[in-house]
Length: 190
Image 1 (cartoon, rainbow, N blue to C red):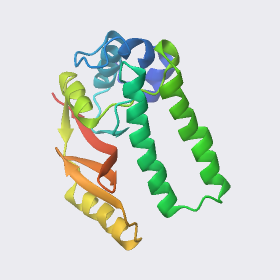
Image 2: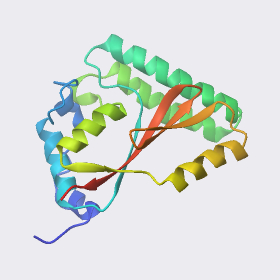
Image 3: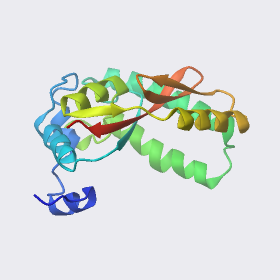
Image 4: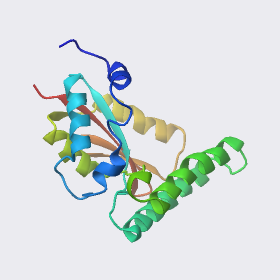
């Protein structure tokens, strides 16, 4: 078998090979990979990546009920907008575009869409750790130097309120104490 890059794989496979909407919705709390997720992770594994970096919102927008998703979205986006407010004034057109075209569309999709229409299905780090380990990936620790550099960048630029913490060899970016994004590195276990 000749090895393909991920881009080549995406070009050759049908565009719908992995759309989590119809796959994960049926069992958001399940750790066993649903068929499409399983085939997607198997295809990633077949690429034998040396390192794969995964970044994800630290919120469970994949809950089965509307109420769970509303509460998760409210908590996550309230913290996200608070941190934006502390560092970027409301005036720049770029901020307005990000809020409307990115965050606004995400929120609308999380709250208003069901089934195959819902695309935003963020899940927390602990769920991804289990899922990726079951698929044959192993965590690659982030470098101490890199984490130190990121911490210095926050301190140097006086970004009060932003925090970083290490969790299970992964980096979690927080606003105040509220986790916003996780960053983890993975390698193929041979």
